[in-house]
Image 1 (spheres, rainbow, N blue to C red):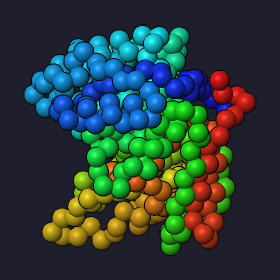
Image 2 (image 1 turned 180 degrees about the vertical axis):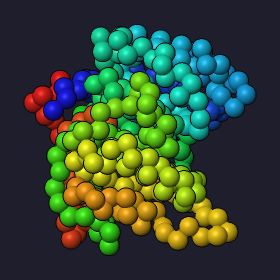
Image 3 (image 1 turned 135 degrees about the vertical axis):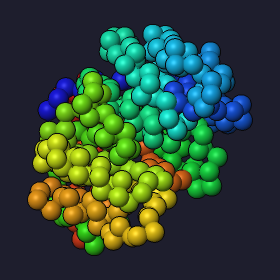
Length: 308
């Protein structure tokens, strides 16, 4: 398997940097994040430009990337949490200091638009944490998601379960887990952020998309040969899906299932990953085992001798 770099897990009192790589955020979100970080036993440090605002973005491109690269280079910062998604991470991703991150490894956490960071790091053999972000910490029902983020940072490997689904495909797969938001995944193709999908367990989630867009993206994954390479597929939440006046005719599960009929890998539907309050942390780039049975899906991550 690919030798992914897993950063060290955190100890009590370690510092966590807060950045915003995409949309602008407000002071209450930051204060709430700082409170949560302290309650988890860590210290929080704000990026210099965290509360700047440049149009819809949290700051100018050069300032957003400066914040995250400054924390990457700072040996006192042991993890970086991205505060909000939206749009903007792709604009700065090519300037992420991956070489420095290899020399000074630390966890980068977030989801949604931050998927671009996860994919970019996977493409360079570096693990990260796909997790809820501070902009959603306050949601009713999100406490478990926040708890799994900090548990993961402390060294607890994730274990997720999903209920049985009529379109699931039973079986077992082992491999490195990669993925995230489907739109960002498709946007990464043909760029330096495109990961190697061979023998990987792919997880996908989405929000506020039209059903025909989901179909178009699944067509892209199939046409590029990505689906044919997978060891397994984990389908998270597809929230707020939209349809046209002329109905597309299939729901999300039908669409995904239809494009996977030519392959034999196991498929789990309804894993608690995505744009819902229950968005449990998983390690992008960690060795994983996916089992799908009549009872549903089980995704278990654990250390692997080949990972450092």
